[in-house]
Structure formats: structure tokens, C-alpha cells
Amino acid sequence: MNNPYLPRPQRILSVTQQTAIDWTFRLESDMAPGFGQFLELSLPGLGEAPISISDFGPGWLDLTIRSVGRVTRGVFVLQPGDVVYARGPYGRGFDPKQYCGKNLLMVTGGTGLAPVKSLIRHFLAHRDDLKAFALILGFKSPADVLFAAEIEEWRRGADVILTVDRGDEQWRGQTGLVTQHIDQYAFHDGPTEAIVVGPPPMMKFSTLGLLQRGVSAEAITVSFERKMSCGLGKCGHCKIDETYVCLEGPVFNYAKARLLLD
Amino acid sequence: MSTNKHLSNDAFDRVLCELGREYRLLGPRRFPGKGAHSGADVTGYGEIGSLSDLYLEGKTYFSPKECLFPVRETLFYFREKDITPAAFDDRPTIIFLRPCDINGIKRLDTIFLHNGSEPDPYYARRRERVKFFLIECREGFDSCFCVSMDANRSDDYACACRFEGDGVRVEIKDGSFAPFFAGGEDAAAFLAFVTANKTSVQVPDLSRVDLGALFQHEIWQEYSSRCIACGRCNTSCVTCSCFTMQDVSYGRNQALGERRRVWAGCHIDGFTDMAGGHSFRAKNGDRMRFKTMHKINDFKRRFGFHMCVGCGRCDDVCPEYISFPTCIERLGRISREMTHE
Image 1: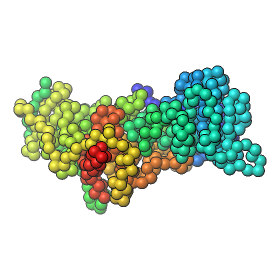
Image 2: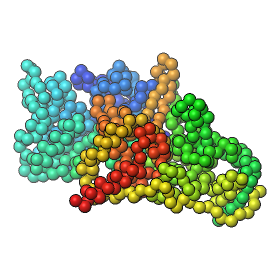
Image 3: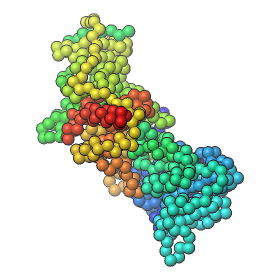
Image 4: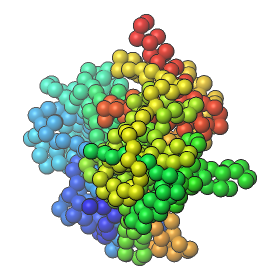
């Protein structure tokens, strides 16, 4: 019988510092994930944690990690050539076909950008699949902006609103919460789908803002974050009502997600 | 076609001795001195060797789930880059247990074997070696409500036993056990199940209830003031199957150690904590609500039958005397109020 709990070694190819506390680790991997899926990352002796896959390509995948827990702190001292352990990929991610021929508005808060980054790159490479393509990317401060150089490149294919809650003297970009930018967003003609990913309060008020702007619940996709010890539908930590986030999610249609009560 | 035999206690002990050569025998027993208080025993499931080891006069504090899902289970050992799955006791196993607990293990099977895309290999390898010896239960105990939960009967057993004090009646359904009991006297069919408990509940159908309003109901605030989040209800429950991963290093060498899974419970602090600082259900009453909904609503919506089997252990062990059947009854009253208004 297959043993899905055994992690496999994955070599670190590169480490890119995004911010002081968010780094991207590129792993040599044959996992071949889908958009928005996650894996269980582990360092034997320290433990295991679910991490969303921020980007991937042939033979590699990226994990954009914040150093906040025992496992992630352990990963942060590693160098290219070192080995981490992983199992997965897990969960139901984004289906790009759902958005084809429509306008797509993505709203992200902080590290919520990581789970959708691969999907953003997909649609920039297949720009004709979408009509309008807009990104409202919120961060707390200029020092917290992830993927800063890539965001500038994304402006060539998408309308990008990069906003920080509080600017500083050097900040020349937009300020304010993502919800303010949802309120002011000029929607394009035709059906619009929205994707919202971020911390729970940001998701709550962003989805409310989108509903008020006339986007239906069925046209909104969200991605949840929960504690998970297995990723396999066994450990019970991620369960909400009769739904297992690791199996049916982490990506949900909001018409379903809004009925999930923790 | 099953056969029925009657054996003296001595003859039954000799059968146990014979079975013990081929099978690991597990059943309800006392663990002397292992109770929470000095000099007190605790009851649970463990290896038995003779009839006198079986604890039959009451309900065990801990359920038989640990026969299949141990409190702590090593998944694998790691040493530098080597990862080695943990071995286990692979002897075929007989578990002596009551019908409610057989039905409880059906709930564990549902999560570990059937939820998600693949079976849990650690549970499966134990489960496939287990045969049940049903302990006939005709009266139950004060806190039992198995009849209300439709968990008072089971036909999932290899043999069924009626312990009469001065002898044992055995129904042998699995023919492979017939030779062990060949020395017994032929007897008439006897097996019966409890048909009424002292405690009964009517599980409400919550499909027409506004769950948002139900979740905000004041009864959960009351449970917040009573529940101390000790998790005894979770650990004693035969159907609670949640676990958390735990890495243990041997000494100072982090690269040498083991990964375990350990029981977790939705009442216990930290169950939903994420590394970034977010968590859910901070109040103990919200945890009571989550557990209650899981046991009598959510699980059924997913799998078609209730998770709770009405064994009543959660009532027996709660230090705050929180009654689960009472909570179910209160939910019923609230749902009737909500749907009639």
C-alpha cells in the first residue's frame, strides 16, 4: 500500500529574499502541481507545515515562505544545495478554464499573492484567454511588497493596482486598503470573475465589497488557509462543517465558501 | 451459518489460551494504579489473557479506538537522509467489544479508509488484521443512548459472547473459529441487543435551520462558561479521529529521531492555530458547538450516517458534568423554535 505520509527530499535550487521576512525557495521537484495547490513541507526533527506553491515550471517549484513558525525558521537557515522534505501536491486549486473569455479581477492581501502567482503568470502568457485582466495587490507597507520586480513586468499585460496600507517618504504608488480600490474599480463590460486571497478579515471585507459592486457570489473564487497535519482528509484540523479544506479546497467558489462557518 | 456453543469459564479460558497462540487478544480491562487519582485504576483496552482480565461490569473510560489508532503512533524514523517507516505488531488481532464500539470503529474506518483519495496505511494495516468478538450488551449503562443513535446493534463480528458469570455462550459466525470452540456444548441461538436505554435523544434534522443564527445562539455562551477545554470528551470518544504531527529528536542531534502522530481534539487549545497567528473558535462554547455539529449533523451530511454512536463516554468523563444528550435535546428545541417562527 502506498504510504503518502513519507516525505521525499527536494534540493533547494535558489533562495530569493522578497522582504525581510518573506523569502522564495526554489526547489528541484517533479511534483507537477496545479495552480493554487499546496504541499506539506517538512524538516525532520522540526515538523511539517502546509505551504502553498507560489510558482512552478518543469522540474521546479517555488515556495514563498514567511519565517513565523518552527519549520519555516528552520528552512530560513538553509542554502542552495541543501535539502528539505515535502509531500504532495494536495488540494483542489484554480481551474483556469473557468475564467476564459471573461474579465478577471484578482484581489490579494499580503502573502495571499503567493497562491495565485502561478495563475497570474499563466494568464499573462495566455493573455488572449481573458478579456480585461486586473490585479489589486495590497500590502501593509512598501517594505512588505512581494515579487516587486515581477509586478512591474505584469503591468505590461494586466491593469495592476499595487497599494500599501501606509506609504513612506519614498513611496510614489497607491495607498489604502484593497477594499477602497474595489470600491473605486472601473469594471469592464461583460462578465467579471474575481479571485480573493489574503488574511481572513481582508477576505471577508473584499468579498463583501465585490458583492456590493455587483459581482455575484458564484463569480468569486477564494482560497482558504487552515491548520493541516495531513493534507489527506484524515487529521481533521482543517474541517469546516462537512467540508475538508485539504480535499475540497483550499480554493472554493464563494457561493459555497460563504456558507462555511468555522 | 453460525453455530452456538456453551462453555464453562474454565473451558473458555482454555479457548482464550489457544486463540492467544495465533492472535493478539485485546479487550476491556483495568489498568491498576493508572487512574487520575492516587491508587485509582483506569479502564480501557489492552491485552488480555484470561476471562478474569476482562472488565465486564462497567463501561470502559477509554474506548477501543486505541487498538487501531494509538494515542501516539510513530509514522517513520529519520536518520540523516534515511527515512524508514515504523514497523508494527503484525499479529492478527481479536478485539472484544460492545456493539456501540463496533459501530464506532465503522466511523473510524470511514475517516481513515474512505475519506480522501487513499486509505491511511497505518490504520489500514492494523484494521485488516482485526476480527471482532462482540460482547453482548442487553442493558447498557446509565449514560448510554446507543438506541437513539442507531448504534445498539451490529452484525459485523466473527463471534459473539454472552458472559453469564458461571459460563459463556458463544455464537460463532466466522467458521474459522469453529475448531477453537468444538469442545463446547451445542446451544440455542441467544444473541440479543439492548432495545431501550435509560437515556434517549431525538437527533434534530437541522437541514432547514439557519446555521448562522444557530451558531450565534446563547447556549454556546453558556457552554463557554462551563467547558474548560480539557479534551476528555475527545480522548474518550470512540469516533474522535483527529491527530497532529509531532517530530521528536533523540538528544541534541536534530537529524536523528521520529515523526509521530498524536491524538488531537477540537476542544483542546491550539487545534486550529496556524503559524501566522490566526486561529478559529477561540471560545470553548464554539468548540462545543463545532463538536456537536460534527457528531450529529456534519458527518451525516458527508457520509450518510451520524458520527456519534451514543456510547455516553463523553458524559461519563466530563469534569464539568456537561451532558451531550442534553445538548442534542436543547439543539432540537432551538431548531423547532427557529423553524416554527
